[in-house]
Length: 232
Image 1 (cartoon, helix red, strand yellow):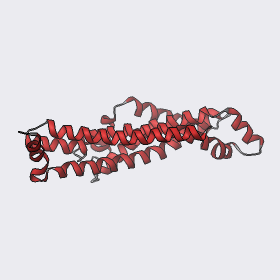
Image 2 (cartoon, rainbow, N blue to C red):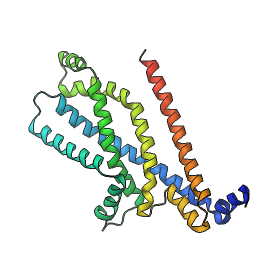
Image 3 (cartoon, helix red, strand yellow):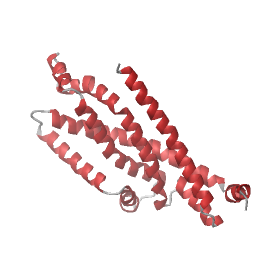
Image 4 (cartoon, one colour):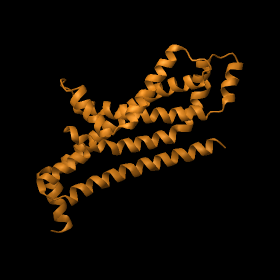
């Protein structure tokens, strides 16, 4: 069969292209919502850990929260994302009728939060200690100094790393098919199971992922260049 015949057979016959389109839509939805969950939760974890590390005399509540965050980071970063996805779907929500996209968003969001937390925490710790001392000397409280002076500088420093985390998360969503969710990879696999042709469906999935990652990498690169210019 020629290239054109292969393309028609795999994608145009019986409107099989819809599997790819639906999978792509779900993949983008999961990745965008999961990274938002990861940023919000990771930001809170980073604040707790950074306040604990920067505080000379952390209180009992801060110590407990820091310990809980440390356990969370250890567990999430030490286990595969696929195992976490399966636990969330087959264990935590086993007896609940819940949308699989929501399950994937929760699972990947929790996974992303562990890495986002360390990214933001490293950004906070990279800010010169004199910034905290300057804020305190102006009469600001510890938390006011953290919110008004430290965090804006830290967030600017870690923006490119957060962009790269989104790229990694986008590719990680390819395991969503393990819970029967129609993501991009699953869409290509369904076409393969119907046509018994593996090359074209999987090649199309790979090209789409490569295109998405290429666009995101270009945007992250532009962001990094603009940040370097603004620092001069």
